[in-house]
Length: 274
Image (cartoon, rainbow, N blue to C red; front, side, top):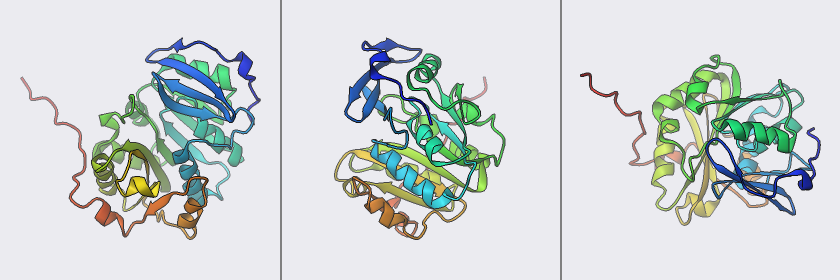
């Protein structure tokens, strides 16, 4: 388990990194990391298993349901920031092997200094573009790929397409899990198109979020969980409802209505020759 880093040793002033201005704000539960003013990661310095962000709590519920009996969980995180979910996985699984891809080189270096993250081979951090680095990884080598990369409040377009999702699928084991975090507002056009995109690649897809978000009543996060194996497990919906902020589940059968009329996202065509 990572050692506790005293808040007094963390920077009080904003820090300029390769791509952003980083701020750390201490609170009663730990430290919030903000990138250009947007809350990006929250870390409990005493308890790595304690996740404050609700979408990360939801991801952990799905991971425990689908891969709870795996000792050496192999996880790829596309988007690193403070590596809060990676810390929680390291605390839960006995021999994890994780890779976090972070585009900001200086941020990747700083978070290791600030938060005493697990060391290699338990957690490696690679600097680069998430899609480019994903393409270099061995096929069928990961138990889970987590997409949690944002530019401001939006997922970069090249990490949302059918072609990108096919790259994810190739990197997963046959029973591997793809977890994608996104944020959207009513009428949830982005979430529906992303769900349609993932569904065009994976046969088993569910959507998870607060019920009011899934019903397109307010802004919030949606987690898409996808696999070539069955995602819905006995007790998954019940476990999601018992979270501190209860989450809803759009199951595989209901997803047909959720994505009705939504077209999958694709890469733009290559520029014309000449």
